[in-house]
Length: 122
Image 1 (cartoon, one colour):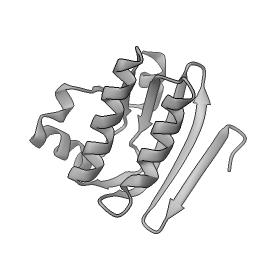
Image 2 (image 1 turned 180 degrees about the horizontal axis):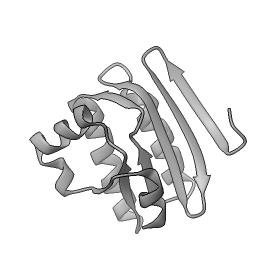
Image 3 (image 1 turned 180 degrees about the vertical axis):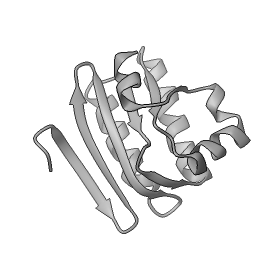
Image 4 (image 1 turned 90 degrees about the horizontal axis):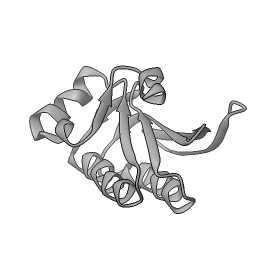
């Protein structure tokens, strides 16, 4: 763990790292987000929201795969974050992951940034 990482979880194909950056929680899923690994992302997102951080930045630059279950985790977090006055920002999506958001139309309900730096500066 690097100095700024405040937590992480790992189960097989997915690891999730969480750190604070100012008013934002930066959540970085690494690997494959699917039916079997979705709770590894859901739990830290809900923990951040439960602790009062309503601006979540999901760094997708190391997310190699996302299925509909993973998409639903992010959509659920978005609803909860917006209800708390914040939002979910997605950053650095690889083309294979971005395609899922394009096909489903989910990209229209998220704030999507080309890089993590852009998301944090917004």
